[in-house]
Length: 250
Picture (cartoon, rainbow, N blue to C red):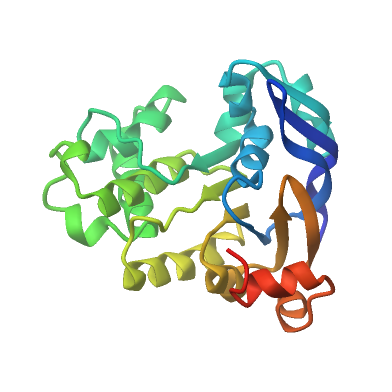
């Protein structure tokens, strides 16, 4: 495998608050990289630094270098092209006030895809990958915002997949999704990593254990431990990691 994403001494400040503290890590191409840690440890900030949605937060300062395929993301002039390459799914669904179909077709249309048959294929593929197709295939013209919270979250995932990103960042995607559906999506993600690199922030420790290839434990804005998932879960090197993975620490 080759390195796809690099963080080199990255610190992020929201005003005077340091949300990430000198983080250095490498993510390999076509892997699922799991990130675990308590609330406010810097997990979401790390994701936002990859596709520069961090730029949208007023008063933010990023120090250090985040790179994709060796290119500093801050040197990329077309931020929209970067965000097409790096799909993002946040914990709370952000549905567009459009039909279910148009929620998924929106990105490809903006990218220049107008062939009706190809759009149909994209919409069906992405809704199947997000385990939503069977529930909505007979009402694709219905408003996406009328779906349940868990369905809207899966619609957000389908929209992120519609542009076939090379990197997919998932921030607690399963927070509003039932356990059975979550497991089905996990199976899809394992298949999808053949075509993309996936970074998975999760508050479900066993989810990281099940599907990630490498895992990182963030606490208080710093990396406590990082390594092969099975090795880290079976024999963590740091006592703090052991406490967190065993549930002694929240």
